[in-house]
Image (cartoon, rainbow, N blue to C red; front, side, top):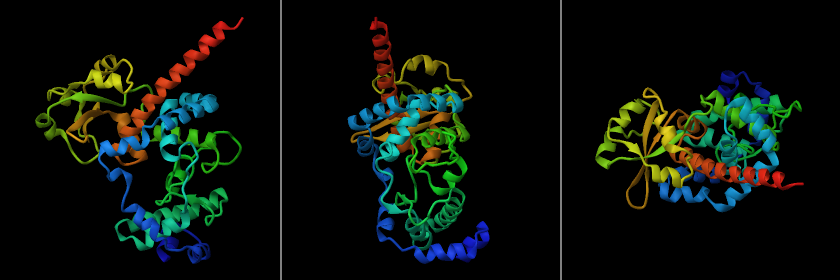
Length: 322
């Protein structure tokens, strides 16, 4: 407790009061040992790329299209990407977590040595957040890792990236989808999202040629030109199947010195290969997993196709009106 007080300038009495109410939750420890991102790609993506999630996302878009357009204009993040994140994280606010945020962060900070340092810091951030936003820290529900609300922000991300997007004086990511939309867009922009730029492309490459370029680290060390010179080419058929519009045109427009990374995704037999660009890396800042980033991108492409259809239908309807 002393480290929480001294390192984060917290009041001793406040910390003591909350820790006296915190309880170890073994279910939290069990859950963190079996993350979805530990699954291979072919088992991971079907969890998220479902027709139900897509249709619900299109409904969400229709309700919040003006807010999404405002977020896209201000931050440069496409509406479909924001909707994809909300759909994956909480099914559009339906599933925001069933754990006590206080208990989850206390448990991982004091009873889970592999990540204790990180979660002690997040516990301190929760206490600071509760004070700043006038929350009752004992009543906030979260994921097993302390992620909260529509966009599943951990406390430090909430404090640093949340915005009051409806100008009501409160940064409410727990119950307000408008603030959640703006905050996700702000998170992406501040982590380097490039307006109007591509995210990722499926590629053709042999396993032998791919091997020297595959690295576990999510950091980018290579350029697009280097990867192209390694006999890596656009897989136009797959690009079309996942909904990437004008893939060849986008591919041809990528600057040679653009940061790029070769990525592999395990299928039941063999691997899929992709090149991720800067915006793909930005998605991994939201969740540090290439699987998460890829499913978010592919879901955003499904949503983009559906949104285009909705807009075309609306345009036709307006033209048909007398």
